[in-house]
Image 1 (tube, one colour):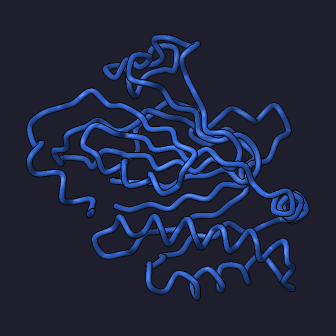
Image 2 (image 1 turned 180 degrees about the vertical axis):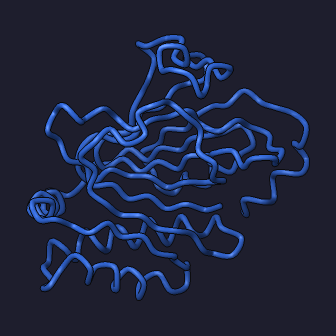
Length: 222
């Protein structure tokens, strides 16, 4: 199933969005259903991966940003790994294999099998205001620290987007978040393009005053 295949028949209509939460990564194609704007794979990371990353973030890790292709992702991520590591370790192998697997699987949704990968350590609040991405699809996971916070449709005032969180969030007790290790696929909105469902409203979790560090992976399909 291709991301472009479901669009034309729904042009001109807006459908109430829903989100799919699953324990099974094989359910990820549900993000392509016309009324779904978020898929979340709930999983736990292996302890050696967490230990490896806790050690890694003590260093000044350079942010990684690079194009990735489904048929060449192994070589591209091997080059990305070299930016962070002088020597390889078994724990590092587990982490980078996971990055490769989720990235490759996600790129199957792209018409051309391509996307842009970002991997970095975050110590501030980044995108602290609730918003909708300007991408068709975005894969997101936080390997360390809290993940993206998002709003179900009954908790968001879309007319207030671009103002303040206090105006955007109708029901503060209803906002939800991706936990550490969870893999989300978020549907955004391409400007000036018709689509059936509105993109998921989300933000970065506030960590600036907590001393936390987040290590996040993001892959964008435009």
